[in-house]
Image (cartoon, rainbow, N blue to C red):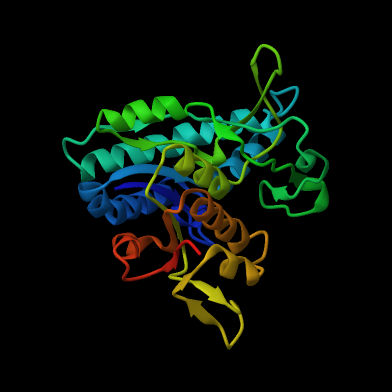
Length: 282
């Protein structure tokens, strides 16, 4: 079975933790342990968040007196793909002796006329204000999809589309790519990638074991399974569960496959129906 795994940013840096390299390595070790059992039985494509890391780089770039201007977000996103991808590749190499591991810096095509460019909604860094928000255009496709196909065909476990991929637009006539000042939601990118790769399963891993109805209230209730329509009726917030719920709903609607949301440490159990919230066709 071909599985696309979307690692939440909190799988790499838990809430309240310092963004130190040693902390990141410890959490990547935990990721490798959680995914190794799945990798023995299935084809895996791993995507990941990068919120804390790109925020740190953005603050450092903005404060560096040696620069005449801060580095643009699309280049900082590429840096985080290399940083996190290298840690994941080395750790998975150690956990899966003999398995080919490939980390690919990935670009995500967005529309230049996406209305999101006029309505910034994503926050980068620790300051959360309207002025600090950046655009988050919808992913259209992943530029390197064919390369990822080839790597999977050669038996590789592929790490790609980190942070939603480096956002780029394409010139209408020549197809020339140009990076843009934006960030793409990594869960929505994972859904597009999973569809284009004809994956059987989209697995979104986060820091809660289920999707909860009434999350944060005394009457919260775990959703064990749902259809896309049922999931949308709960109206999850845009900045937390909302993008994850929308991503799995779109994948299931577009492909007829299965998807699930759950906790990192239960990855194997989720795929085998023993944990998490399963999303199935109507």
